[in-house]
Image (cartoon, rainbow, N blue to C red):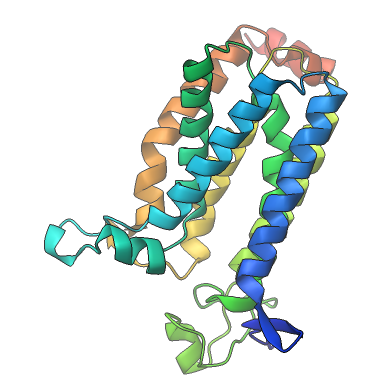
Length: 271
């Protein structure tokens, strides 16, 4: 299957509308809208939550722009802050990590102790699904594959060795779009079942961390050590922490309302 790269989505009044920024902006707008809708539904649309949203948005934007500031162990090879801002990797992982930090700092600043993660969980999943469409249409698809759904891309795609050789490649961004839509559906299903505050976001982070670690094996990212990419090394400490968190909460019975009874019964018989 041949895919066509679309750096320019359309022209508006003679000006080109770039595909990647368009879908990233649309994803952010989708996420912000959904956060507000969820806050209204939960009766949490207050000045405090708006401050938290602003902190998350600002730090997330900075994290996305500066995520490529230190990609090399040799400091002399790393870009300056200005270069990283203008030509950075625009990493989703950097954006998510900094958005979380921004929300935490905003809460500390205004001394707001109510957990707000559940407001963000569905918004992040759906916003990411929309934003990744821009990546699918403009970036290197993935590593070569013999699977029947492998795609071909023209040799003009930057940083894509498979494009130069004409190899069929994994549609890695399509995988992520499907994952994010499935995660959004799962979150919406769990929304009325889990009552412990913040657990929707905890579960989403856990799901995405595991998915992203595995999907990196299909992406065109550079491997840096032991066959793993930079995102994978970035994710390893987070996987340990979030795995510990989810396991602890599971043992406390926090997720019991969302588990079919037959699973709990089978677990009890096995023990």
